[in-house]
Length: 228
Image (tube, rainbow, N blue to C red; front, side, top):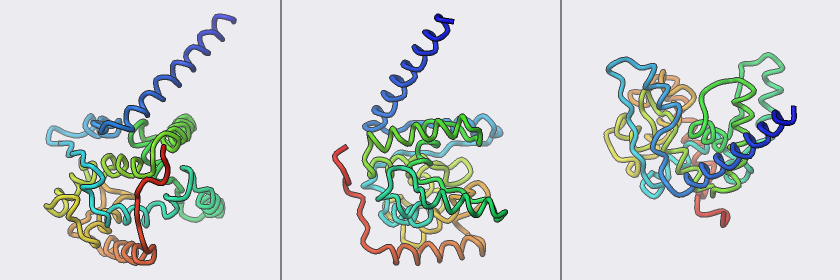
């Protein structure tokens, strides 16, 4: 029994050390590949191709940055990784039997996309909380947004803002217009089934709503919010 506890303790220590170093490394270097990219590639047919190209946040349209905030996480700048009000509202809606609604922040989605696998198990959710805490502690909001926009799935086999801009609109991510950015943000709930261009009636409606939210949001900046 003593050996077992010793083994478990060492395993926990090594897990913390390795994951902290992993998060620290990604604070400075581009994320080259994610578990979801590997899973999609493994499950794809012989014609499947992963489209992904890392770009600095300075080379990603500020419209796209604002569009994903307005569509996915309007409290991104202010929360510590978890939007408790959104969690409570989602819980109440789900308990009332309404359409299942998530409450994942951009920080949580970044943690899931970069470090974990797609799953609804308690283990995976627990790991998501852990990695969200780490990136919120060690990275700036600007870095979280940069990694998010370079890693999230934005089409079938399309990952990141640059690949999405090229795939959907044949232009660089830094040149996306307000409506093009909103179109990409609009498909994020189900990027393998929705199309940013040409957009369906549903995506057009959602895109219009996102643009309105962008205008209501007002002045937007993602300059360093801390000296992390």
